[in-house]
Image 1 (cartoon, helix red, strand yellow):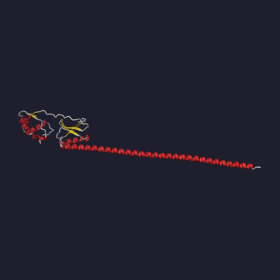
Image 2 (spheres, one colour; image 1 turned 90 degrees about the vertical axis):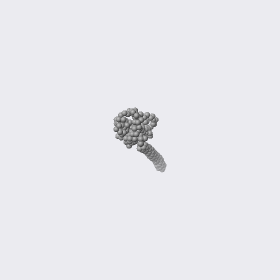
Image 3 (cartoon, rainbow, N blue to C red; image 1 turned 135 degrees about the vertical axis):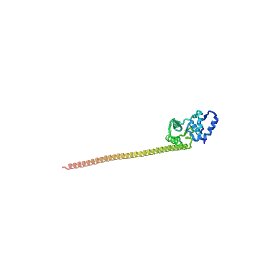
Image 4 (cartoon, rainbow, N blue to C red; image 1 turned 60 degrees about the vertical axis):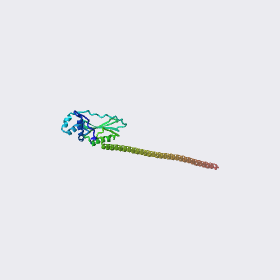
Length: 255
């Protein structure tokens, strides 16, 4: 079980360092059972020494704590897309625990107050942010116990699948809307063209019929007028000739 935890920061002892360290190692299993990884090195040491017995307090007072070694910062390549690489960490400030997420692309960060640092609570906070920004391709952590549990991997996979499904549904909806809009536009254009063609044909037919009727009426009127004039002239000429002949005959018959 002890192999699952990093040893507490080494202590510098007064007196026989080897003997004190041997006692420290013997009590390590008790430390693992009682301590929590979120506690400071000094607090972890107090827990261990108090469980060791009454004389442990006096021995602890003679200890000189070595300076805690900070982990060196690792440089990471800046990603090409926002929220594709995200760093996560849990920190303490004014006695409160917080979860911080930082987008490596933009530097945007999200901070949540943690009522507790259980895995379930951390996963809940992470999923809330991933549902808004999308699941990152890479999550950088300090390998704390909240970030190395298989349940977190499952939650991240689930969030990623959900994000992919959402993106796919959105793309399909967009493609369907585009196809429907295109089909509707095509149908409207076709109907409009057909209506315009029909209206134009009807207008042309009506205009042609009107022109033909007008021309026919004009021709008939002209022919009728010409016929009437010719008939009238012929009748007048015949009547005049007959009258003149009769008059001449009467005049010639006089003694």
